[in-house]
Amino acid sequence: MIYSNKRIEKYVPKEVYKILANKINAGESVFDITAFEKEIIYSLRRMTLTEINNIPDVNESLANSIYDAINSCNNYSELFEKVKSKNYTATRIQRIMLYSLLGITKKQMEESKKVVPYARVLGISNEGKSLLSELSTQKSKSNIVTSVKDFMSTCTNKTLVSMMETDIMATNIYTLEYLNNSLANLDYTNKIVTIDKMPSVKDVV
Image (cartoon, rainbow, N blue to C red; front, top):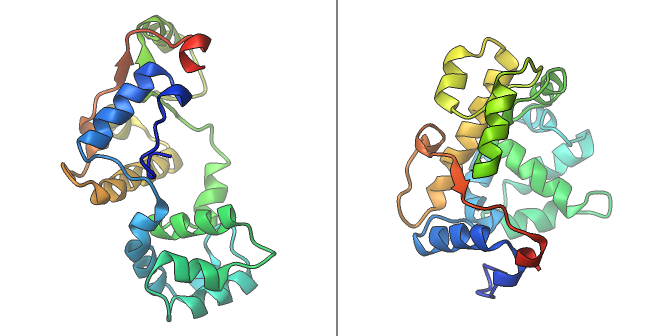
């Protein structure tokens, strides 16, 4: 809807709409995976058939299809059309494209399932701050991340560090398509978004 310039005020909370509107007006938004089509094709063309087969959600047949397709495609639509079949959903192919872009392998995926993932706080209400403060004093198996810098300097779990590195890289790639302020390492510099008041049901409806 945003991509088609349709109004979305009634579909999201007021505070969320304000944030989205500010980002769009500032040229700091990306609406579609096709914005990264050149990067995706580049990442796939650099891979061997074995490396493509090592992408999560890829089997041998699909690996061969992708390997053949990337040699004759230069945009996402062409690549999708050549790879798609009744056996593979559009969302599966989209995930695979993003996995390739981020360099995520089947081994990394399996390793990530063996650890308790961190919970990264991106936005919070004033009421939530007190809850966050309370949680920080309790012993918990999960890591609550409010500062990427602190997490990266103190975390000793290699798998969690690798997962955060992928998060950081994802942001760095995402901002490449910003019209303005296309900066790297925003995970280190962007502050947690604070919403003064949590939206009620009537605000959403």
